[in-house]
Amino acid sequence: MYWQKRFERENPNQELEDKILEIHKDNKDYGYRRMYGELRNQGFMVNKKKVQRIMQKLNLQVFTFTRKSRKYSSYKGKVGTVASNRIRRRFKTHIPHQKITTDTTEFKYYGVDSKGHMAMHKLYLDPFMDMCNGEILSFAIDKRPSAVNVMNALNEAIEITSDCPYRRTFHSDQGWAYQMKAYTHRLREERIFQSMSRKGNCHDNSVMENFFGLLKQEIYYGVVYYSFKELKSEIEKFIKYYNEKRIKEKLGWMSPVQYRLSLLAA
Image 1 (cartoon, rainbow, N blue to C red):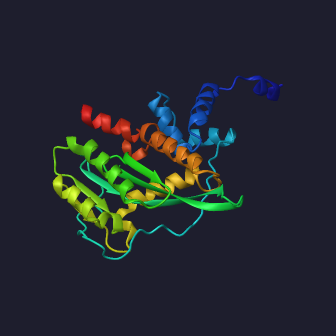
Image 2 (image 1 turned 90 degrees about the horizontal axis):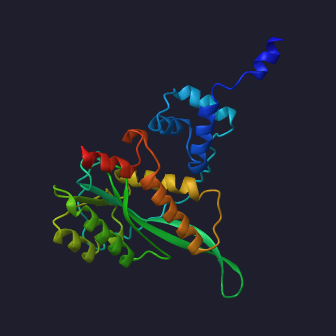
Image 3 (image 1 turned 30 degrees about the vertical axis):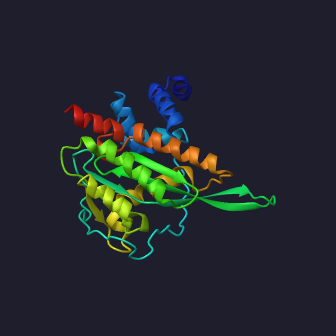
């Protein structure tokens, strides 16, 4: 009978389904658009709608946790030098290592204190990002807001971007660490322009805010961490994955590192 023949017919999408399952194993945050991009990178000529249908069939929809929390603010008033906003939301550039941005974000984890009680603790991340491709060039992690951490990450970012043939610009908000004499002096020493967002305007540094949102959505919201070491390790692993493997449509379905290397090879 017809229905028996149809039931016994081989699945024409078996190879594609197997490949989607293989990609999903290492990229559980991939929705159908990013899955489509990765398939194209691997030589599969298929449209987005078909990828979407297959992922629904395989029950591979992405469910992410979102939670609104108070944004960490390092602003303590004018405690040093406040630079003008040179970037003015012109985040796009095709020159690697020319426009760099930074900010600080806060995470929470739980641990047992000296009295045996469960207590909440905090972790702070200070990354420096290349606006050209969204790559995290350097970062520092500590249990408290730290000038030493910011300076260490700054020095590493300065060294990495020293190959830029144009004068560099380092952007930030007006946080206390970016007004420090040590920070501003280090930038002047390297002839780097300093740029700052306007007070209380997160959109002036939206590229970094977007990264923080992505990071927390994929490894933090909906998860409880029970040690500094565990949370630190997950952040470090995600940054490596984000830089080297997580593809973006605006980068031509390449990861930040792949995109930078393609520009240098052109």
